[in-house]
Length: 309
Image 1 (cartoon, rainbow, N blue to C red):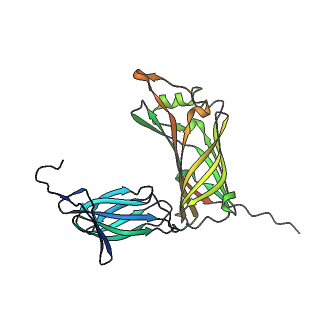
Image 2 (image 1 turned 60 degrees about the vertical axis):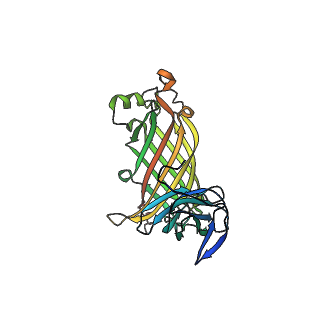
Image 3 (image 1 turned 180 degrees about the horizontal axis):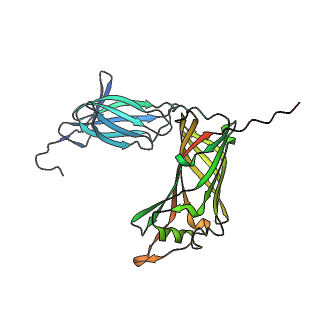
């Protein structure tokens, strides 16, 4: 029910007409606050298939007045006060787009069909060997605690390398993590995590990831599949990877960077220790989220020795 003092507009029939470059459709039925209309669009990919994208209705002054996702048909609709707006459309793997739309009171104002272009692939690294830089790399994890909050931790000591091949799909990454370098900021908890209840670092000093099969998922998104060994158990892991591109370091060295995330089920690696709290709440969640921020530098390999004459 409308609140007191709010005038509702009810339209029983509609017709479509053109005002400049904007399509306006009068409503068959429904109600809108006085002075409001609807901003609409449909978002598709370069071949016309619908995309599930995020759309922001932005005022002429640059303020976001509405935001939402498109539906399974790529359609978006939001009720906003009459005026001039831009629809800002973003979708992973595609170039963002800004479309103007003029919204009229009691009407549907459409920006039409918006076809997003594919986001260009950033330049790939030079072929060959790259060393992971531990001083500019972070290996973090997040676990649920008592079903209420999260525990954040990291591994402080690790090494690794990336071999860039042609085709890119055949590239390889290897990472060696020292298990006893686990750090959650609580020494007693860290000692427990190093014990046989969890990582059992005396028997299994390393966590090892060896991955290949670099699959391009569009734009800067890749999927890297590999084998993770923890506590002597090996499981297949898929890293959802965002490639940040190439850069130059403070000393002029070539650098490459990426972010990657994945979710692990700790039971898969024998990390079954659990303590149940009242009302059946588990002290530690079963899913561990892994977050990686990686920088690698081009390896400087020694020149092959020349034969003496």
